[in-house]
Image (cartoon, rainbow, N blue to C red; front, side, top):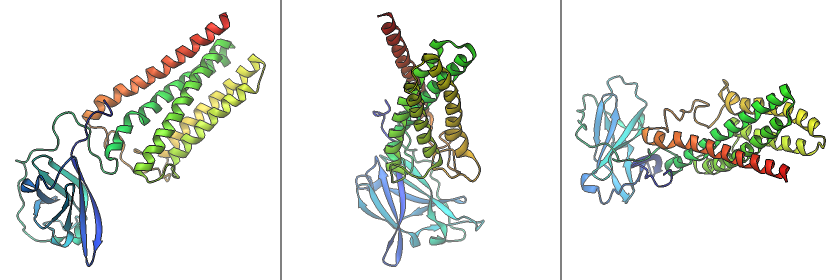
Length: 322
């Protein structure tokens, strides 16, 4: 469902310099400006209203340009820094791009009449994912990268709890359960890093950037690799269980600090949603359509993780019987 659900129509806007003029370059997604030319309408939006843009040039089926100097708007406050761009075609519906037009480059006109656009239909209809600036089609990765990390945290939390139970009860089965949960959690962590790197390449321009949360996630995965190296270096079962349980407790606490606490500290910059002043998923990515898929995906990946854990536990039990 995460891959099959279509993305809604939308536009993205960039500024380009051409000769002595600055142009707005508008790219459409799931829309065709050429086929929809007869119904195409553009507006600049300020707090005072919507103002028609009639001077534009269609460059292709999904692109057009607008001279900034020919955009007119009204602003009674005189404090608007950016205007929104709103576009409409019959096939695309009414879509917009926030803060797309630098107000100082457009022409402010007093008492310019505003248009009423309430009669125009809004965006794509039916069950669609939202079209978000920069994210585009990669928003689908939300159902894999983020949800797998929820499953990973659940598994590592399970391993943390059973490490504490071993310390308190000295039961080797609890140590086994902790190590198996950590093994599956580490696998989910590696998959989360790989999907995150692909996402970073498309949205941030590189597979790995100097990001507090990304670096913390990488350190956390290395800590759990060290956990299994430590276990394999000790032959005595009880000594191995005791030392690795203590390490497990420390590693889990540090991992949570690295990926949830440190990126949210004041003065720490992060490109991830919800950190460094960036909008969180709840206010930016997660509309009602995404929530219908996202929350079941969190539950699904968590259940898959514990299902794999249970298979490993049963395999270990059968090996001991034989």
